[in-house]
Image (cartoon, rainbow, N blue to C red):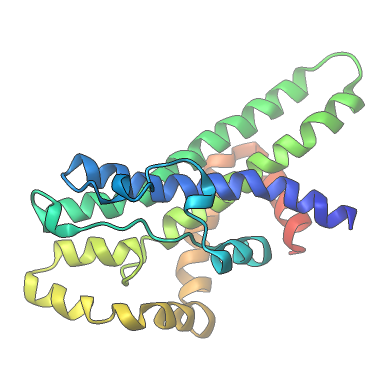
Length: 228
């Protein structure tokens, strides 16, 4: 029971921050381009309860990735819908990647403090270890959300970006996949080599790059949280 509580305490804040900021970023950029829908529905709010999807939240704590309720965007309100929707879609993943960079800086900063600390080093280590593990998990979850959401398949953000780039006729064909998008995503992740050959190497490489000498701590955090 204590282990479960410890895991939740390490994952809760980084996970909620990652999915909340992702969705708020979509709504904020949409409003900047002329669509106030998110604000009018109370979704430009950092309260995570306004954004949580029950299944997606549970998935984060079980599998290490998940999702929130999408922020509604009315493309008809955007000044240049096709172009502006690209930026609205990009806002979420870019926010996660920015959070990953900040998490890496925090992780490295704590590591530097620990290496230069004086006094009771054991006590200091016990205090900062949970913070380092939170920063390590935050780095991982934000890189994962940022990269995974760029997969060019609706309803993921990458699908929105693709439809904004493609000619209108081809974009309409891609949009027709959206009702089946979630099933297609599950199939691609669990029944093809997309994860092992494409996504995992990209995610791991970026985590290694950002974490630097602290990558071992990220691995330690993931093993503690998920047992692998």
